[in-house]
Image (cartoon, rainbow, N blue to C red; front, side, top):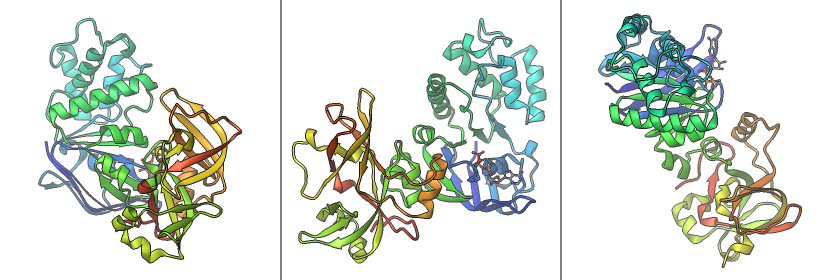
Length: 392
Ligand code: ATP
């Protein structure tokens, strides 16, 4: 097992597409790092460079102590479990194993010889001709272990391994991969576009956008302290609300002018982000996580200047919470990153509704007016031009 290090690695395809730009990222020995980002952000290309399936255009790629830029794929000692752990329900176990290993000819050859005499005990009642649905969780895991070929690779690479699974199996296999990875302590780079997968599996999560690394951090840190608008909007489901506002000086201190509505900025927020004071009179993007908005009717006492009014357009009662879509007099953020996020979500433009995760005790009815309380201590602020968080 070994660390994997990208040092200012770029990839330009022959047609001129810059797929990965100056990627610097250290994946520690035994660590699981998830590469996440919207379609086309370069995560698969980054992974394929580690695998040796794509040349590195510039920069240095190391596996352990060795610079591998010119080392052929078969000599990199990488277990390319591209989609092999995911046991596609429509394939037999044999096909699943062969599918995952097809890219690595040496290992496929070895595995074939091992097929007659399987590596490790073959699960009883789990013939390779059987489909994964017929296998128990433990047996599925064994199959995946077999697919690993029994040897100790320097690193595991996984590219969207769960994408074809139904929701239930996805959760199950996700936790199996996490557990197995932790048990084996094998360095793993895991590519997904699914931020829930990224959050639940990664020791650290690396968010990419347009070939560039945006932020790499443990999941909670990424969630609590996104370095920019893109990361703030991409990580979290439902997504962070991103509104356009102007920082204003009010009677009680700083305020956010959101158009018709105003929110007071608590003193403690200003203490944490003194740079806000330097933004008086300027436009900022205000980020509000859906869970930081509540129905005023179920809140005992709200801070002054922490309420917004709107009309409940859609009420999705999930039992544990109500996801509310509220039409309010607010301006959606105008920034490149926001437009890109909207596009990625399949929307033509930034959504003007405010999404809130309300308590199931809320009686707010669809079509009715609702008063909302915002946890103004949990607001996020971004510069609309650079997209950077206004943090300190
Ligand atoms: P997805 O989730 O859709 O697989 P991704 O984040 O993995 O996306 P890549 O597949 O790495 O992104 O692609 C990054 C960029 O490089 C995209 O613009 C893509 O169109 C382009 N690209 C990928 N492969 C090639 C290729 N062989 N030739 C030219 N451009 C390519």
